[in-house]
Amino acid sequence: MVVCVCNAIREKEIRDAARKGAQTPSTAYAALGRRARCGQCVSFARQIIQSETATA
Image (cartoon, rainbow, N blue to C red; front, top):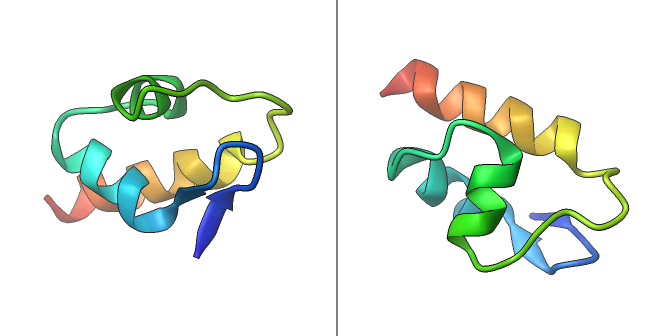
């Protein structure tokens, strides 16, 4: 599923970044070489990161 349309970031990429230590959407995006643009995806990315760190 696409999380960020502006940057074409998929859920899998956010989950991978979270597993590698990203704790916020901005650090996850930075790990992917991107940054949030419009910001509409930030809350969803945050939920994914929290879900991923809870199961780790």
